[in-house]
Length: 470
Image (cartoon, helix red, strand yellow):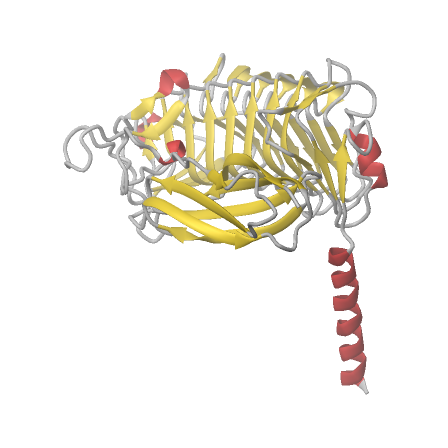
């Protein structure tokens, strides 16, 4: 009887899940509703609010509230083309209804947000844990957290840039009793009185492949300010940050215990790492990292412990172009192992997962791809997507797509209708260097305008129109 009950519960759960997926809808802004909030209000679990290119201002396009729904608010063509301009009155998004990881914001730039207290760009509070992906948070301001304020919340940030924000407490991200996850995040050029880039208060966040650069504090903690916090930093680059008083890179205060693996701290002033002498002792653990000044450069004020483990170095990391915020590792004469090779390449923890190119982990936020040279980085993939015939006439039932790539990559090509709805995935697999052609039948499609979108290694590269005549 018990087994039958479990079976029925499982079957019911799967049925509900299937129904949610099957009946999920796409709500187009501004075609269906004139404001983003109107689209969110209409959406139900699993729906996508798809926002067209443009700059969105005024009521209904700021202080956006998911209302606790597991929905996706996504731009059609990415953050460069879709801007939420708060016009210095209100913030971009306000999560305060217990949102979970399936409450997703994808592909927006949020600018000119202002809050008199918390979160100029985005505010997450009271166990609200949304997912932010492909988002730029720029030139926002508040008292706490100019870019993002997290209050007892654990959002997930992936491919997020937080730049040029300001606040009294923390220009970039302020975390109060929060444990967010940051992956492939850039925190650049933010400013505050305390904690220019990040302020952790009784928090234990996880940072992976994060760049914290050129942030400024007029008191303590140019890059990171830790208060009773235990952040875990893996492949993090902290460079060019400054504080008027102390802790240009990291300032630890009152029993903070950060852990650093495969990290770079370089050219921060007045110190890379600083322990306050006015609080409980701090402890920092560092391994396989490049720290300017070595362990002697960490100012502890005889008020804490430095666990200086194996693999650490003190050598110029040889960034490609730090003046223009390019903190990739350089190797001018690749693959010749000479002095042009950054000492951080293949110098990370050998027990860490290997870099995507299969080599030993590098130090810092960006790995050097040893499948290409520095003059041909993976970010500049030339895809050259072509659809033909175009238009497709009555006598032809096949769409042929050609493309070329200059490095081995995972290629995804999808077909969308004019409403932005996914029609089919035409390709999703690894392809080698060179030119490729695929073909797909279109005899089941009605006349109209369609679009093919190509992604390479998860990054959208090209969108091309296809006209179908029937």
